[in-house]
Length: 266
Ligand SMILES: [Zn+2]
Image 1 (cartoon, protein in one colour):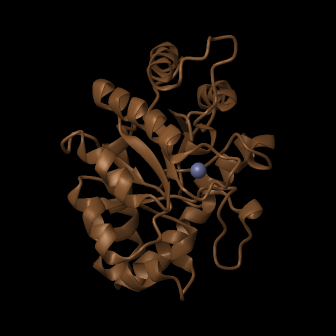
Image 2 (cartoon, protein in one colour):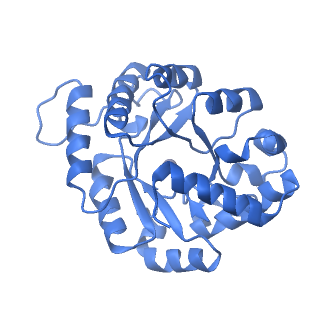
Image 3 (tube, protein in one colour):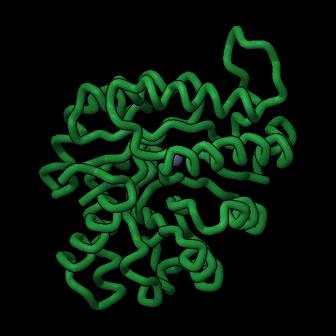
């Protein structure tokens, strides 16, 4: 199985990535996509992926840091400089970068955070680069689904990617799928009362990928800081039970989906 969203560079996972990956492999989770989220995380994520075969890097600028400028570079109001800078980082990366992410929109950042307009400029630059490089995107979204779908729609269905940590209802799920994107299912599905748990039987299996978002999101009974990629197995088990399918069916389909989406090796 594949954990399509894990911050393996962050503590406590980053203290012993080899151990975390070994435990994951024992549970049948053999690959992990590691999205960077700000400038400072690009290098560590690339280094991690270079040192561990099962880790695959994604590079991007998260909406929370949409106002971040490259140090030493003159202020250019964002978008074109971000596109060039990210393009250079991807081209020069010592290992293949499998996606642009995590990127997106978040209206719940509070008054200190970047405005939606700032976030949209940074998002647009990164979506344009993803289209140019034919890379999938890893999308974070809170409170701005309409704006995000609109931004994706401007690329005319050309962009592939995943709505990560999807926890909303069936109507939005259907629109995400219709837009050609995948749904990233994680710890939220393990909470029996969660809306996402109730719609699991209705989601198209060819558009689901698994993720933990470790160490940011917990499972039912597992606090976020204890979550590891090995917990993808528990997430797959819950999905299998809810759909009346076998673990093998869920594991096979989601692994196939993730490999195809991120162009991962066998
Ligand atoms: Zn994340």
